[in-house]
Image 1: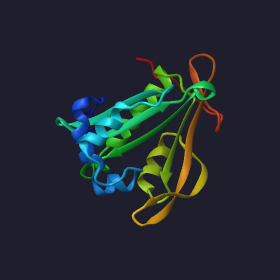
Image 2: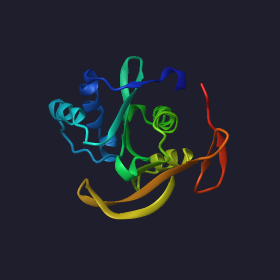
Image 3: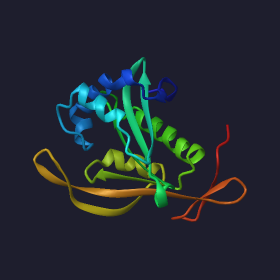
Image 4: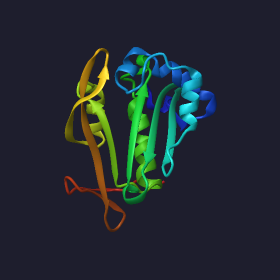
Length: 188
């Protein structure tokens, strides 16, 4: 898939039906905490609700006018205002075509360049090898194992806690706190 063919944009209310279809697909459902058979109405209500004190960013990936991926980033408040947590899903028939990479790239840019977040965190099922590899390519590290984290398909499944930590250094560089490396900030 040509990455330039993937358009990343803000999620709009009219995307809810497509997102419901996406999240009801077997593989997408398997990799998330969503429940089967969610209705458009229930997803619309959930989409409109943002937890008090949090900043939410909702983006979608679109190919040829079709919503093929979704990512939600929530910024915490108070003493964790430097932290964001996210979740994402890609349509089953578009997995492995660069959609996840495009969503992650946009989310990291939002977190680093516009929200000033220094810690991004997530939980991922231990058997979701493709997602774990994607997160590791973006600098996420395994922080811990959460046993019997969620009930999925008739059994309890473990989850990995992963995070990407960036400390802002001098002269426009970001330093990876866990590795001590430094990389230039991309400027538009």
